[in-house]
Image 1 (cartoon, one colour):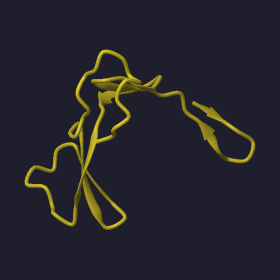
Image 2 (tube, helix red, strand yellow):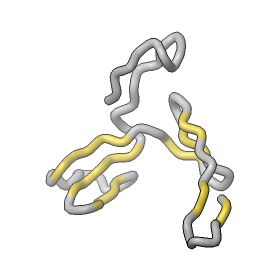
Image 3 (tube, helix red, strand yellow):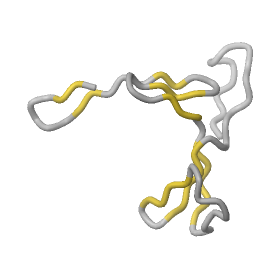
Image 4 (cartoon, rainbow, N blue to C red):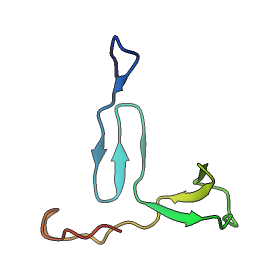
Length: 73
């Protein structure tokens, strides 16, 4: 991560099929919006701007290459 003079940051990020990776963290990728429905299990959950999200769910299926399917979950 690089801090710029205008207080912005540049963050290197690798968005693979199974994991998201930065220089400091590795985590499950895929985010599923639950909306106003509060998740039963709070683990890997995020509440943002009035909505709930689950991280590590809603992942796209593995394809032969990353550009053969232009659909997004």
